[in-house]
Amino acid sequence: VPLKGHGKGNAKGSDVPLKGHGNAGNAKGSSLGRTIVTMLNAYMGSGILVLPYAWKQAGWLFVLPFLAVAMMMSFTLWLTGTLFRLVDARANEMNVPMVSRDWGMLGQMAFGRCGQLLFSGCALVDLYGGLLSGVIVASNQLQFLFPSLSAAVLSVGCFGVLLILLFVEARHFSSLAVVGLGSMLIILSCLLITGGELVALGEAAEDQVMVNWAGLPPAAGVAIYTFMVHSEAALVYQLMEDRSQWGQAVLCSTGLAAAFFAALAMLCYSFFGDGTAQSFPMNLGRSPLNLQLLPGELNGAM
Image 1: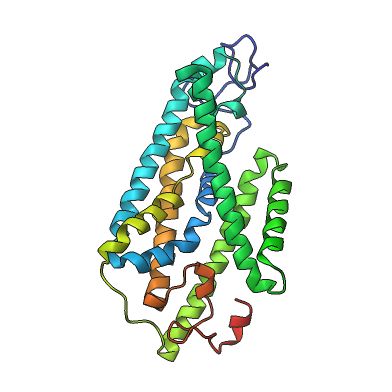
Image 2: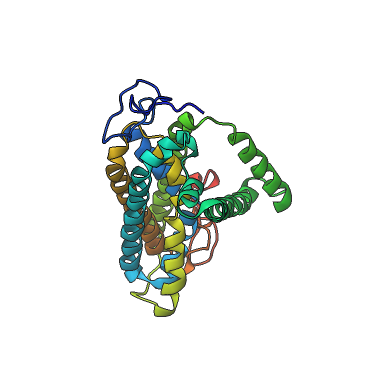
């Protein structure tokens, strides 16, 4: 299989020069900005919807292990890109296309066919686990909009939409990411509206705690799940126009995601305290004191 964009050093490659270090670029790939947006969207999974509840479980000091997890996951993501860069020459010799340079390829290089099956299997378990949790969370949220439909029907509908999205070309990932980020900004706006009304009515919670040691382990698990995007990162890395900028992409995307997640969760916990619901959207438009909808006119839309 002829390779695209691997320089003149490969007889089967193209003559397109690459940016970065050696075989570290894809001339028609994603820019640094588009890669950051794509990674941000990868972080915006179902984990963010339960982060406020994790803060409720652990208390204010959960911000410290949360940031520690973010730094650890950022470092391992950088290591992922470094590992793929180190095996570029070997991948060129094996004529592996860019989009096929994934965890399975690493497993094959290290341990042969058994390693390929093991690494690919682990990545698939991670990806399908995220898919399953996303379908479950999405169907639960859709019940607010379509109360007459059962959770099973909504789950099948969500899964059907996801099947259609499987046919979207990789070059459109960053465009879809903009839609996801826009949705999160709308949710943040709804939270601020709800919180402002709670403060105005004097119904904002005051029962927050500094730390709940028993709640820290499960809350830390939520943080790890939120930043677990390593299976997707392999493809995002390979699609970069200049893969020498992978470290910058990881640092910017993880930093922005951590700041946004922490602000969102801490705002929610400050407004609702011990009354914080398990799913973030369930907090919008209601009072933590009596769990009833607030009287504001915008709550119907939220």
